[in-house]
Image (cartoon, rainbow, N blue to C red; front, side, top):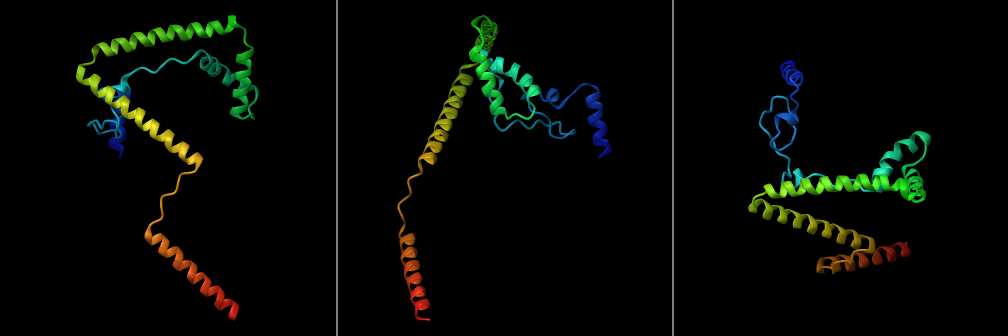
Length: 184
């Protein structure tokens, strides 16, 4: 075990982290001596896409949340978010413009990065990425539909012959046992 810690210590002293050793797929090494890369279960071209920039309101709220938490340490997050939302609504347009300009600048950089990445893709990668996006959409739609059915109350499946038989037999047995109790 000391050998493992020593090897890991040498790697970290050299400035090599697990992510740097496995830069091909971006997954970290799970064990110090496992120089074999175990890719993430869902490695795709979508994983390399940049994240969308925060909207102007989200940028404002991420700035304000630590300030509000410091002022009200015992308040719930939902209360703090309501206060931040109220402050955003009351914020004059001139102050909102700062956040909106930052969002627009980040959005432009995001679009340029997306265009750069898409130019480098091969046609087969584009097709596989489109399939992946479609699968994610279908999965999301199925999840939404499942939630709606759960909220509305799922329709019950028709009873099987076995279920009907058991229910009738149980009722007969219940009636017979209640009659025996009454006689006693």
